[in-house]
Length: 375
Image (cartoon, rainbow, N blue to C red; front, side, top):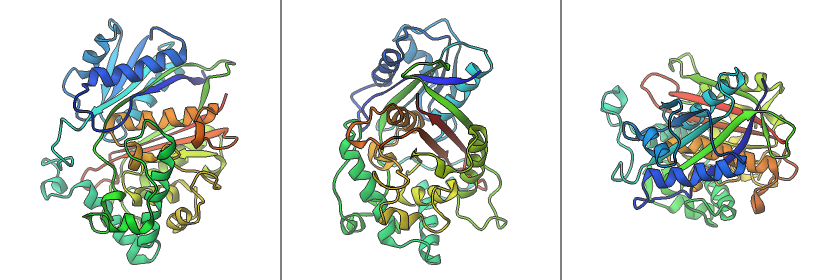
C-alpha cells in the first residue's frame, strides 16, 4: 500500500523551560490533526531521547488520545524519524489505517548546558562529548585540505540566513564568515556559531494511505540502518558510511538514480562539518566538495541543491526526539509550496536525513532517510 503524509505540525523551537512537554506536544499534534482534517488516529509512535518514563501516554492523555496502541522509541537524534519509519510501515502493511508519529524533547530542563556524555559508554566515560567527535571530523577535513575554516563557517552563515524566513526557528541572523570564526571556541575548530543550540520542541505527522488529494505528500521511500563497526577499514570520518549506505537503500526504495534527483533536502547539521560530510555521503555533491558547495551557493536557497531551507539544526534548533519530524514537516511544506519566503522553486521531490550518535566503535547509532514526493 502506498503511504502519504496527510498532515504535519510543530511547536516553536527554543529554550522553553516554562512550557512542559504536554504544551509542546499539544502545539504539534493540534496543528497536524487540523492539517490532516482528522480528529483521531489508530496508533501512535513517539520518539524521544530524554523524556521521562510514560511521557508518551502522559502527553497524549492530555489531548484525549487514549485506548489505542502507543509505542515509544529511542534512537538518539534519529528518534523522531524512527517513529516516522515505524508509523509508515504500520500503514504500508495495513496494520493500521491512520497513524500519528510524534517527536518531543525538552532539553533545557534536562541538562544544565550541554548534553552530558554517557558514562556507560567507553568514549563517554573518557569525556568524549559529541562536539568533540564532530570537531575531530572537522580537523580531519582541514588536515586533508578537503575543507577550510572559511568553508565550515559558510555553512553556519547560510543556515542562519535561511532561518530569517522561519518564524519557528530558535536563532537566525545575517552573519559573516569572520563573525562565525570569531565566536567562542567550543571544540577546536568548531566555534559557538557552528554548533546547534540546546532546544525544546515537538513535531508531528499524520500518516495514512495515499490518495489523490491536493495536500497528501507521498512517501516514495524510507530506509533505516544502525551503525556498523567503524575502524581502519573505512577511510571516511565518523558518520559518513552510515549515511551513504542508508541513502542507497532509501533512493533504491524511491526508484531514484541519485540524491541529485531531489529538489530540496533537510539534513542533520548538528555542527557545520555535519552538513558538509552528509552532503558528500548522500551524493548531493562530489566527495571533497561539501565545503566548496556552501561557499559557492550550491546548497543555498536558489542554488542547484538547496539544503536546510528551514535553517537546519544549527538555527531551527535540535530538540533531539523532535528534530527528525521537524525536518519532515519542513519538506512537506516545501513540496506543497507552503514555505513562504524560504520556498524552493518548483520542488517536487524532497529528502530528509537524520543521523544519531554515538556509540563507541560504531559509525553512529542510527540513520533514517526518507524521500517524499509532492501532491
